[in-house]
Length: 270
Image 1 (cartoon, rainbow, N blue to C red):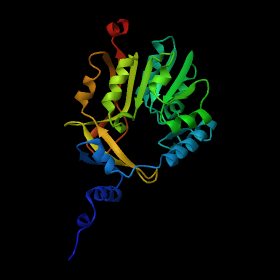
Image 2 (cartoon, rainbow, N blue to C red; image 1 turned 90 degrees about the horizontal axis):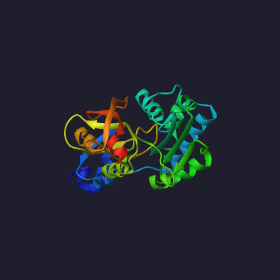
Image 3 (spheres, rainbow, N blue to C red; image 1 turned 60 degrees about the vertical axis):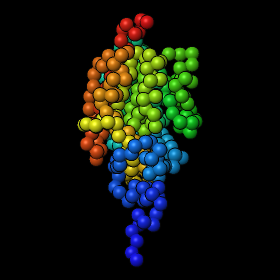
Image 4 (cartoon, rainbow, N blue to C red; image 1 turned 90 degrees about the vertical axis):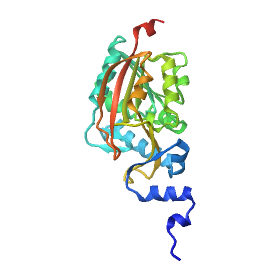
C-alpha cells in the first residue's frame, strides 16, 4: 500500500518538513504563537551573532559601508523618514539625541545613520538586546556614544532617554502589545516605529518566516499586524506626527510601514 508522507510523519514533524521544503518568505496563518514556533526550525543564534559581528566590524573599521541582517552592501540604504525622525527628536532637545534602540542588534541603525548624527551636540545610542548580543556589543563596539543593555529597565537606570526606536522588531516578539504597553508606561517623548508589516485587511496574523538560505538557515514565527488595532495603542497618549512606507516586501499582501509619534503635551506635563 502506498503511503503519503503526511501519513507517516507526526503533525509537528510534518509542519517542519513543509517549512523546510518551501522557498523563503512568510507562510501559514497560525492561531497561536506556540503553533508557529512548533512549525519553525529555529536558528543558530551563535552563527547569526558571529555573522553580524564580522560584518559590522568591517563597517566600523571602514572596510564596508553598510550592513543589514549580516549582509554587507556597497551603498548605505537610508530610510530618510527614519533619519528625519531622529534629527527631529534631537531638535526637540537642544540638538541632543539620547535614544533606546530596542532589538538593535550590534548597532546596525547607529552605523547606518551616524554620518548625519555625528555633529549633534550630544549623541547616545542605547541598544537593548539579547544577552549574547549585549556581551558581544560591549566587547567589540561599545564607546562613548554606543552602549548595550539587556533590557529597558537597565538602560533607563538613573537616566531618561527621550526617544525609543522599534525597527523590524515588534513582529518577532511573542507578545508585541505587552512590549508596547510597557513602552507607553515609560512615556518617551518620541516613539519611532520602522520596518513593520501591516495587512491590507483582517486581524493580526501569525506566520512562519523562512529566511533566504544565502543569509542564514533559519525560520521563526512572525506577526503581521492590523493597522487600526496597532494605532489604537498610541491614540490616548501620543500624537501621530508622520507615517511612511518602507522598502521591505513580503509574499503576503501587506505594507511595511513606519510611524513617528510624539507624547501629547498634556501627557508630558502630567
